[in-house]
Image 1 (cartoon, rainbow, N blue to C red):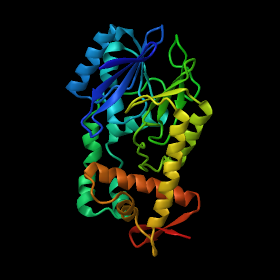
Image 2 (tube, helix red, strand yellow; image 1 turned 90 degrees about the vertical axis):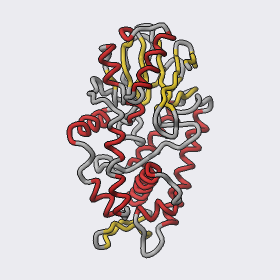
Image 3 (cartoon, rainbow, N blue to C red; image 1 turned 90 degrees about the horizontal axis):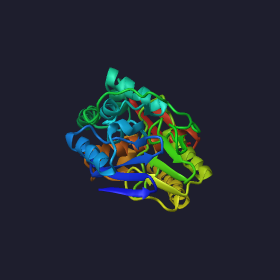
Image 4 (cartoon, rainbow, N blue to C red; image 1 turned 180 degrees about the horizontal axis):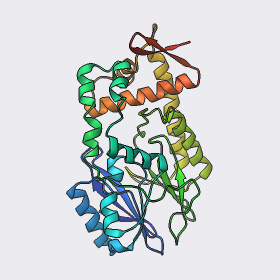
Length: 319
């Protein structure tokens, strides 16, 4: 269903093969063409949904002036290549995420993944299953390359003033877009109304994703948008309240992580089992593990915990 959630701003939902069920995509009439915010997964069903929405709004692909990919996850980036092929519009994407997409389609999953899983205590049988998570998600994307890597404050396209806002954390190059005059922030997965965005540690190129995420939340407080249009769930009419809830959530989770590092220390896998429990499916276990790793490394960097090697294992413990 297509809904005009603000003057000249259309939200439509594209199905995804995950528990979330769908992702919100947005069409913004700039007065000088339309900007599409996110693209959905690369499935025939999602492609039909985008095509039918364009018909409902009454536009052709040739009227798309720009494609914003908020981040590299498949439900946001999967169809970027297809929409670009039909529209010839430029793709806007944060540079770290654009680099990741290029490397992923060139080289596959990170080569140090096996070592990471083993050293942080993931059982061998699960590590084998974990190795298939990234390739499976990759199959929901068509390879593409970004054309423009906006910095915070850069204007996207012409007409109404759309400003890029880099918000690293959920991914290293997560990109939000601010419709400046209206105070509307298209937040991707940076700020969600009902769930907390996943913050995982996946690369040495971004050693403190949680620290970056918390700083990005503070940046949104300084921008002070009047409304947030997220990639999942309904619009947020009180952005400051939700941002402060997310900041408090992570403060409490950090406390739980510290409490879970029992003497003589715990692996990230052991901490994830304590904090998130064991009744999880494969993808949830993956998310819980990498989220725990991000929190533990943040605690190391701020000096609350220390990281030591115990034979082939990495152990976290208090000073």
